Length: 145
Image 1 (cartoon, helix red, strand yellow):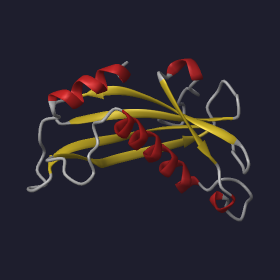
Image 2 (cartoon, one colour):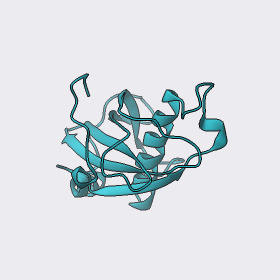
Image 3 (cartoon, one colour):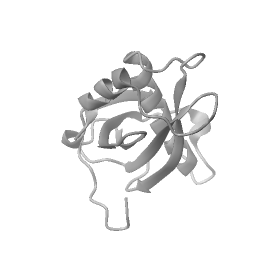
Image 4 (cartoon, helix red, strand yellow):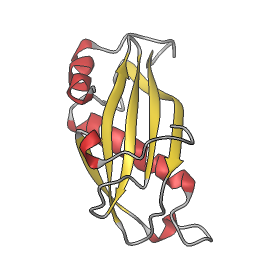
């Protein structure tokens, strides 16, 4: 995302994951702190992976690691707002992919924040890049724009 980033709308995303804001998410300015948005993004991606059966935290021989992330803020969210995180995949490479995500407050159509996470898949033992397993790749195609 950049300074001139278009503010995403709900219709731009294929999946949504509800997340409850917590009192402790606030900073001294009275709104959800910027770093918390990244945890919302990671929670939504992890939930997608677990629900689709592609994340075996303890024993997968190939694992996805975050290589890059970004967040652009459009409007504040607060406790006790109900939020949902929209998830889509913008790019699917051989050993990496880029998730695009957006946080939507209550039932608003425009995002309060939007960003991306780049995951690189690596061999668990060597920590070297590895092709995304074919079964996992098929799941990712559901969210590919």
